[in-house]
Length: 119
Length: 119
Image (cartoon, rainbow over all chains, first blue to last red; front, side, top):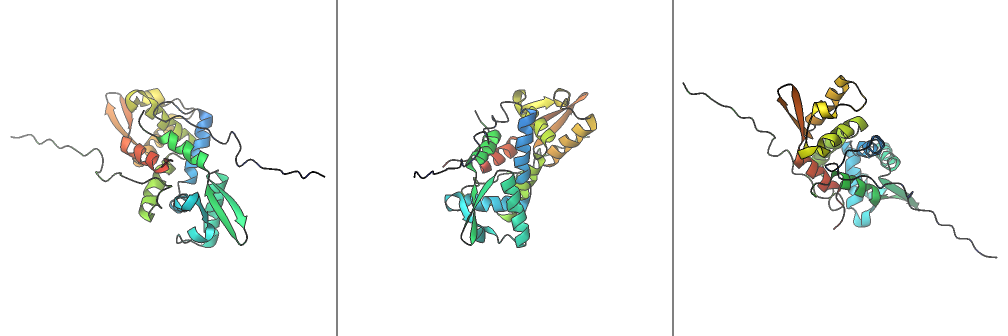
């Protein structure tokens, strides 16, 4: 009997791509809704620091055990990480005891591209 | 009698420069507070569209009369533009009847640099 191996896509194909540099074209209403939600996820200082800790970690992935000491309680850390996941900025995977977080590169690229200056 | 002309600085000299790419270094607590405030200014879809309309306008400057038709009331437009100014993303200047808004390029560059991906 053949074994069926199922693979799951890492991200929906239409997860991004958005948007042209903000200096080159007006955002559509729909794109503004999507991008505003991403910026909202980074609009809290503690959440932004958690995101930066994951992003700057080796290979863009970090164990929650390595990033959680940002001066707030563990439930608050969990709440912020959930918000970042809900906004599509982080993905997570449980391995044994710990959950590992990873930056979603396409989302980071979309935000960076939109705010890029120059030609 | 001599006439004294006072000039005001357009922006504090330390208004930016911040920060290295988020994938290369963790944000400090102070930088996270500053950058989160900028992202918060872009976290509302209408505000983000207004910002994009100014940014995409010729020479990065727009009359409020050219950008205000985003489907909300004039007081709401004014409120959002004030938030963008308070966050340092826009500057404004009255000329005759109209107020003109301009993107603060150093702030846009700081956000773009922080979210830039690549080496």
